[in-house]
Image 1: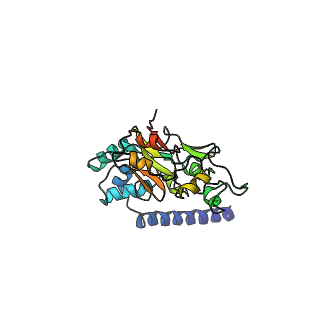
Image 2: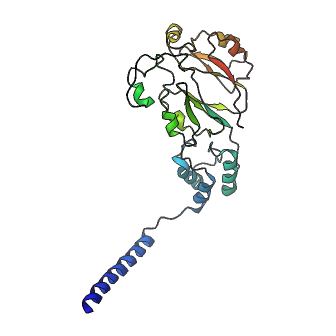
Image 3: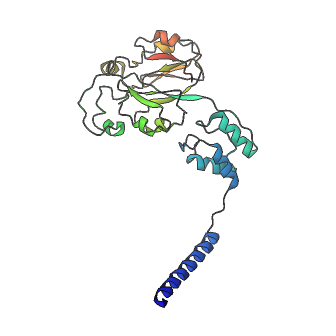
Length: 269
């Protein structure tokens, strides 16, 4: 009997000593909890996208708690609801979040762009870009392998006819897709307002663009001349619209000879 009790007592004593040691260590090395940061964190959606400019939701909550920023409206996925909740916790002005949605500025589908090679490698836009600029003739357009689809935390992106498209009902404007796209083809677009959008990012000269894509911008400047408010400019042979100036009149759309400028009024159901 003694042979059994002694080992049991020894093991129990070791467990008791180890438990006391851990309890003391947890007190000595305890990290103070920032209760205000915790409350702010509860107001955020948890996407950890970095759209606020900080290292995810925890970073933004800590910055607000420490007074590093007083802006409660930096979380675009959370929108105005999150801004108001944060303001209530911090005792600050909520401000407002301009509703935005991501859109892919490319019409390089299978009808407009032909393939120049039979790609059989890893289906990654980033990797495919390094192999002769990807499988399509246009080396500036959407490759369509779905890197943006993989990173979207809201399952808002899908591939249609070889080009990425975004469901505005699901998009939270978190910018994850914008950071991921190797061609920088995704822009944030104002929600519920009529705006002109150039659905092309090809910066080649007009003649070369026409060889690559039937719907690519040729930099002809007709849209610039048609715009009466100075919202359209051409930089490096590709048109660009300033959404703050654009009135959605549609004159640039009418003037574009290749149809790469369209009027968008994206709304959520």
